Length: 170
Image 1: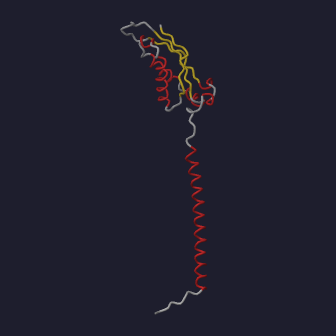
Image 2: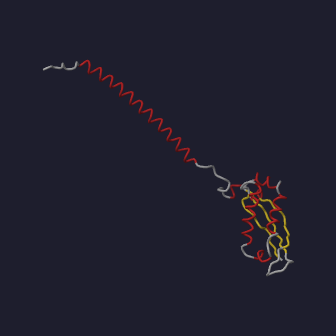
Image 3: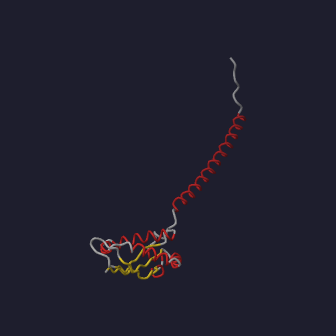
């Protein structure tokens, strides 16, 4: 039988040193990977939790500035109402509208667009019939439609609300 001599103690020490260095370098590599992963996670979490900046629509009204600085009075508009089966021609409406913009800059832009804004208001009101002008929900409908049409013509969501400060039908 062939006998294999036992390994020398010096050989075991060399293997242990090599394995020790390998274990130490692996531990160091794992530590680096852990630290990098931690930083990536923190930055990714901060980016995802940051969210979108607040738009002016999400701010309360008092944070957007005083309404007196954002409101633009278009003056009174007097139009003849359309006749219908319930009422013949000869009735008119007088409506005064104020446009409240989302911020002061939009208000300044709106000042330069007053003729267009007045035209939009006159166009919509002149299409009312006498019966429509007397209906209870017409003011809310006018506010919504005027806001949409003015925002469309100005090219963005610049109008916060429409105020009807005078509404007379005769």
